Length: 169
Length: 461
Image (tube, rainbow over all chains, first blue to last red; front, side):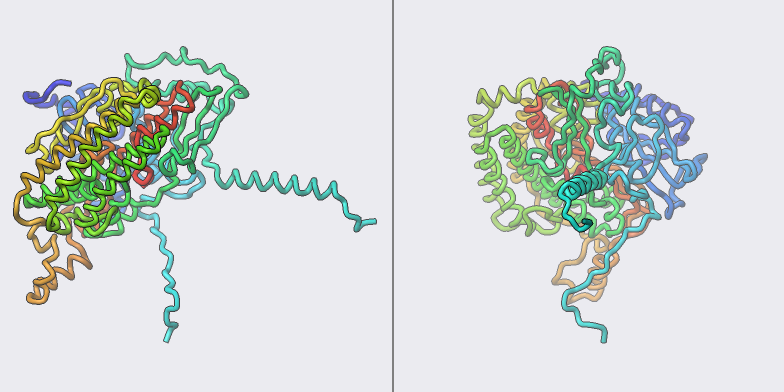
């Protein structure tokens, strides 16, 4: 592994994909889901060796988030955080996934380590990853209905009954 | 006669009854497609993928699918369940292993038995309450969970920490790393049959937890590191306590060396067992001691410093072969490095505030409430409503004892996180088990699971 004291500016990877400047991350890109795998593969080839994190977000009750021009907000988002060990950089890729067709291509071919993370995003938010070798629930029981981290999925409360509480007056 | 007692009928009936009861039990507990399926029920492609767990690696490093022998018929292999209730699975991890005699052919971890919906709960709690929730995820390193949540919240708030808060945080998480690794040493010893190590590991860990209790009020799930600083200043006499902990644990690590490192039985059971290459580790997103044991010097404290880790001197411990023994020695030496760091932190501990003096984030001290109406209002607001966090997203990662612990926070401008996702290192690291166990012996499986150090609270969240 090379030390990174004099690393040149990162090569422009698919510069036509809309981006936002972010003070916390080196690059924040918003590819369309058709170009998502292509973009991740391009980052993989540019030295982003590992996929640190992948998760799904349901923006049902918060549609007005900041997005770059040319990106249509959709209900779901798949958020991928890639990590380059050699350049010590992070990039974040956010893909819009529509509610009526919550399907996006799987990254397993690019990063085998997203296997469990994609299963979790499927289980919790209900995003379907095509070409995933084993897209089953991972945290919830197999016969569970619904996807708990969706915003229209109730939290469910059990009323607390205090012992020997005074009755209604 | 019709009322004659017919024994045959009864026996027949009870057998039938038993069969239906068993079927109902299986249906009730089965995880369906999440389980490891018998060879007859899956396609050749899936079987090759599962047998050759390393298949999915990038080019140049994969096994040719045609080289993998899948000819063994179903009746020669056996699928056994290990867990979820098994003493060596460190909680409720369930492994399904396909065995040919003593050799492991396929492995699949089935998880979710400790799932408590903490990410969903996190959306219902304010940022002030949030740290009580996340601290329960990785219950062996609660302070790291609190730290990553607090750092993510502060990244969105864009507030500057007073130096003392930063250094107290660093002191506490390093102590926590020592206690977590000691706990690992203890359970790993137990899994390999060294019961003495179990007792010694717990004994030393208790010293650290006693200090936590003195400082935070609780041994575990401390809720000490909060957005805006820490809950309380260090107690009187903390330097002496730290001194004693450092001296004792450092001396004891050399006793562990004598007990385990040089011991032939221990070496036999750990060396060249469960080996992993750096490429496999990176492809599977493995981080932490497992990644470092393969020779990759990746430690977020060094490579992407947070808090004030760039101001203290320490070494990143790496292994070479990525086997059980390397993972053991990486962790043992990390205890020593952490103690080295704790000593430096104690020497350099700056004076000053231990939390941000921003009344919108930090409640005012108790004494001020009696004097000032405004202080009372701020206090009430912080604890009922919480503080508002500007809209935005942040992903913050720290080096927990198990690897990269990340927190992805989405804020919609209210006082509760819109989405709080925790990237648990154990959750991701578990994917490495099928690779580590493939072709090994069943007896080594226990040692390998232990060397991965999964904490199920964090895996299932």
